[in-house]
Length: 220
Image (cartoon, rainbow, N blue to C red; front, top):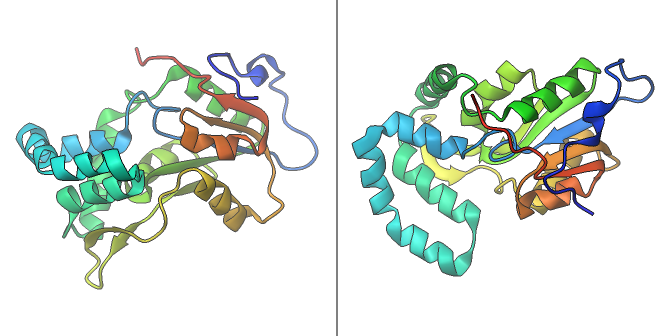
């Protein structure tokens, strides 16, 4: 049974280092650790007010189509194609790093950060498992000290420019479980997992401690 709007059990536990087998903790990113979708925030930051709103207007047909096909990956790919197609990998990585540096911790829920730091302080391997593009989440993952980042990979062409497609399936739902098993082995177990949408429930169901919508803090 999924926890809803309850503080994670382990927050009251001891901060003593974990002894015994290695502990693996999985966090969704957008909406779980952050208060908003980081990919949309990045696109808005990069395109500017006019460019963002113009491109969002041009995305209306894709948004209308989503009402019928309900494929989030397809909609996200349309946004990547509209905003980023042709951008060189190096440029995108620099922009993502600049965005992460500028927004600093203003996107993050303080209670999620406390839980993240609690687990890291106990010596657990803490990973981010997100449907957002790997390239744009990577600077945040590095600053958090994530053990691994498992995300949706953008596709780049032979010239190392964004095509607008994805190189991997959208990392949501059962894909999160598949990717965790791909990285850590078929017998992977999670001590705790946290998420905020139905697309996280497959991953959360793998964990001993199941944190569904347990974080609600707002940045100061």
